[in-house]
Length: 536
Image: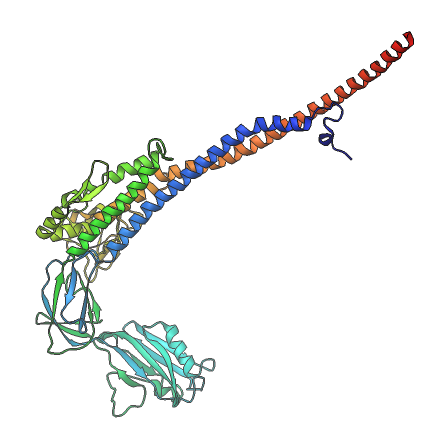
């Protein structure tokens, strides 16, 4: 069956099908072109904004990683790292350091080993073993369900006493090995219930009565002991070979005993690394600014006039004058030689930077290694750098803790959580992450967490990217425009389809009427000819 559209023009002799196509195209094309232009513009804006958002994210992340890596901080040095290794603690300012350390003894964990049995699943005897550690006493029950070396190991591990059990196998059979934590106070013993099977007695051990010449139970492979060191001639003990509470700001790791050998502990400033970091910061800033300039160029910039981009440019332009440190030395990038040129780019005055680094290296480092300061000597800051957001927080009603009563007080206006002598800021307070230790009673004080370069850039990035922030709002506007364009296109397609349908209907009607007129005309022509012939 021939469709109406296909038969258009048959009656009238006019190519109405082509005419309809032309009329429909004339109506749709300009509207379609307008939508395509909107789509292209919006896509370009989304792409440019995505690049800029990625740019500031990458800038902030790279700078944060560089700073948190510690390569810009004054480093603790050791004259013999095979004996003592040292590391500066992030956020600590160790400055000039001079100390001597002698390692007399390494900390060790108590380790016991049993006699060989034929296999891990062979019966060892049933009954109860009491395991006593620094964490308390734990009953280990061996019955028909776990009567084996493997069952004993699993039962000890399940007790979570601080002692771990493992199985060693060799050509002589299987043995159980028990190991505690390092430190003399972490020694442990195993007492077998007298009513237990005789086979369990070989797993008994008491360090107070242990005789290596007459072993009836477990064998002591290694005794629990503290690390013993001499710091500047003063002997001190630690329960671990790694500790951070002996030399302020320095993590110490003991590698081996070296009685009679003194290791010199010092410090090395990273002035070259800081100089390079300043140059890298300026280069990254200028690269981001170039992206912003291109996107906001007066005639070609796809994001010219965008509110979010303007706010980003405004905040970034203030970076060189932002106060980054309260250490008392240089506090802004401008003070160490980072200057803003007429075109808005940054440059480094190398001579100025070198001069400030020579005169106040601690002050320059503080801008990259932001510190935490308290308004009173009665407030000891425990949390490390990066725990609390930069800012100044009020602490009130501080009461120092003792062996009987925990510390108490408020941080950021909210009651702090007591942990012995320390106070942990509530997660509901703006100061969350801050941990302090009151050294005395204090009605009111403050704790200041400096911004630093990384914190300043991160604060700008967070403010711009926050929900409802300038960049987030710009992204939402472009997303909304994408949806609007899709809706407008659907409406246009519907309207144009209806218009074409009307054209088809109208031209079909016209074609029918023209065909009828032509039939009438043909009839009249025939009649006239007949009349004319009759008269002749």
